[in-house]
Length: 374
Image (tube, rainbow, N blue to C red):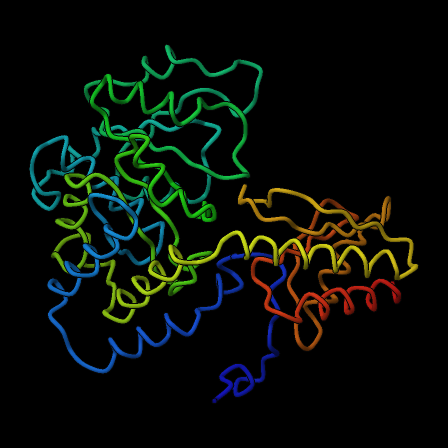
């Protein structure tokens, strides 16, 4: 098989960091690649293929509706458009610019992040609630007061990196239901657990948006919106291949097939066995570091940085300022390159969720070699 990276003079990269977009998200398994190749081999009428794929994914995930987008951010963008469309009772492409500009989306300040550009880009106004700390704890009354006749939706971010300062999702949904305002959950990296594919919407969220290229291991350029039938239909009415803003968000037949295959695989996976495998990789790292005799510490941490229920190994050289960055840079400069993430100045994380058999040994051996030279 052709090695495209070698052709371009690039080293192979072993990803011990996690499902980060900058490292390619994840590796597509055989079933996903085969589905993409099959779809690429002939033509199809895209709208018909979309309908079949979306119906199949909705069934697999126990949802009323599903829609495949070109990334999770595109899903948030289309969800915001759907919310405005439903508020005015007409297709988004018929809306006046001032109608969009006067629409409001409620968000918690604690949930603000670079990805909410996907919502701001639409032209709606963000109404912020609360503070990203615990000085003034969030209340139901404050959320109630933020909702007006202009409110089209509440956007809620789920992640391990959000700050305190937001009500639990259940309480947000209860408030939204009283005001008949839809709730959209940004759950980009909230797989595992697999149950999130249906539990968020069964709890009352109108839509939950996931990355297709993280733990689902579908094409990295895909995202998945799951949710209430009327809301997802409004997204489909706006999204590709409809003329208008959705035309910018093209999803090929290969990506549709690949993500469907990824979802089929994911819901049938033995997730308990996968977790046990990850635990074994973490123990392996800890044991090798402890046996290395370099004065390093290694511990198991849980959950990971995104809040996913996956363990990581944290390797530290206590008090060694700049040690972590030096290790990271040295690992990336090697062949194969190795990606890890930092914990402060003196620690690096090794995340097993993007490793395959034998790679944890490679990572820890290289790390020990680098540490011995520093």
